[in-house]
Length: 66
Image (cartoon, rainbow, N blue to C red):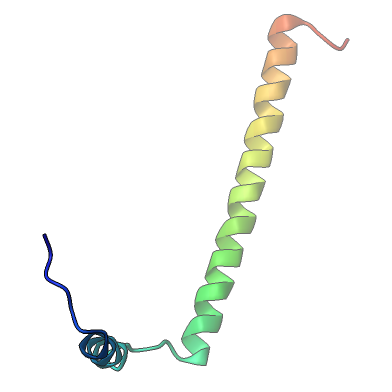
């Protein structure tokens, strides 16, 4: 069984660890957000094109919708 930590000691450890966090700058956050949005757009376009192509091939093979 794990040993119990005093709540005060635990909070001191949490504060100590939280002080070590390096937060990204506003510029880094904006660049990362823009990159994520750009990749989402590319992925959406890719999957839309793949869906259209697969649908077209299935209609061609099954001769449906003519």
